[in-house]
Length: 490
Ligand SMILES: Nc1ncnc2c1ncn2[C@@H]1O[C@H](COP(=O)(O)OP(=O)(O)O)[C@@H](O)[C@H]1O
Ligand SMILES: [Mg+2]
Image (cartoon, rainbow, N blue to C red; front, side, top):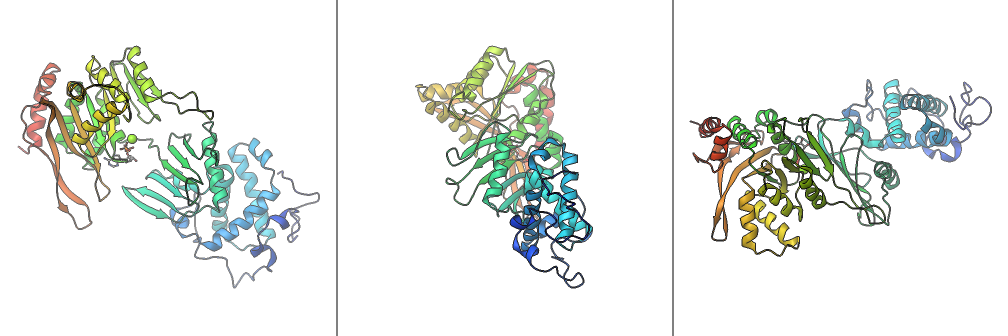
């Protein structure tokens, strides 16, 4: 064991506070100064940590932590910080560091006469180790696979999204500065810094989760942290069918669309499942195609062997060195791609993507933020206009019609479920108007007893979509005909 403990034997058996020299200044009043409560009458906070709690800390325990728990934790934590040498601790591997912290915490608990069961001790230890070695109170949330987003609005409001529903947790940070330290630790891993002078920062956790931090004075109620958790096991088309996000026939239609190299735009709101859907569609790419992906933060997981992954770069602290999505997409064109995949189209790169789709890079795809296929197309147009290309709007529309074959609309419904609600194809231009037709829609029928939305995916009865010829060329004509029949319920 090591530490900056004073001479003599700090663990000296029966010694009372004082054995650990630094205990006095750092320790909060409640436990240090009051005489130890008699064991029989006052087991501390029996409601906060149930007996039998296991490590890692179960959700139930996290849910029930109360003020007492945080007070005891602060006391022990402060004593620990005063005792331990953090510099030396940092040299150890995680396991030894944990052991070291464990020894000292157990000692502090005994010296301060804090009464707790072994399982309560374990839970507290886990919590303290997380604070010192990891992301503090966020650790148990980061360890859970069922959480899609973690939203921290200042130190005492932490929300999570589970199964499409946002809920508040009882996780808390000690104060703004603990939360800020954790934010700092996260962004320093990508070589950045957050403070008053640069209060906005994007980063990524080592597991690939995307992080955004916005700090005071811009965020009024304390540092605000948003984490989109990286799912190791991405959902596949079969999962989407299982969840009812798309019908089996709908999945067959999408498979034909993917295989016959239609150019696809995926549209949807934030968190509606666009990236997930894009990832599913990439499964239909042949293994011998050269694919280049451009993303702001690499999320896609392509299974094919011939994939080049590119990522944009924000400007550095001095404001230089930025590489935009447009830079990447333009560069892509010089890399002999067969398909180009753009994680999210937000700006002038729309123009380059359309050009790529138009010039022999069939089967390219991208996602875009819009609430309907029509809106997706008009957003595409305005991105090009706002990008400073002085083209007449008819020309831009011609480009869109000549490039995009299919728009797939994803949506997160009010019951939290995610659905593909339209598969729409771009038919052509009539006068100045882009004509589209839905191939399949999700019809909402009502709500079941549990508040789940019921409905079904139905074909609109179009027998011969515009990509029919394309399907025929790829020998998928029959498959398409059958899928369309199935979708109509015939
Ligand atoms: N069809 C689906 N059913 C259930 N969960 C889904 C579905 N599609 C996406 N998700 C989950 O929703 C979250 C957001 O999905 P994502 O594809 O990143 O959305 P977007 O790109 O639209 O912001 C992820 O955690 C993802 O696993
Ligand atoms: Mg996305």
